[in-house]
Image 1 (tube, one colour):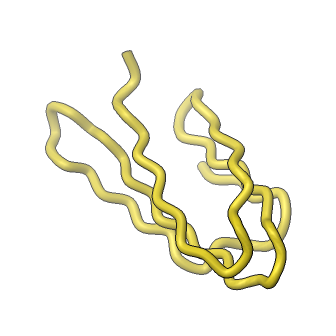
Image 2 (cartoon, one colour):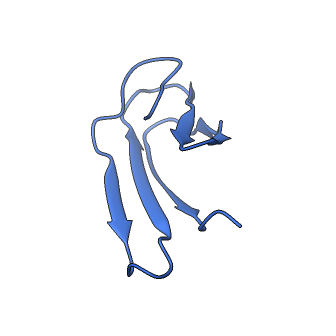
Image 3 (cartoon, one colour):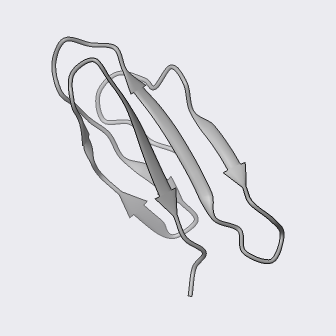
Length: 65
């Protein structure tokens, strides 16, 4: 379900607001002292952000159309 190019996410949190609008909130931490490119795959959708060094990052994925 989730893929990471380099390293592994230590904290990943999934939150679904309700059953009629399944928005997904993902929180990732990069505790390295360098940027970390990651890939997040949910169903048939993918995002591939680069997490800044020493950071927490929040991604909100809306429901599929």
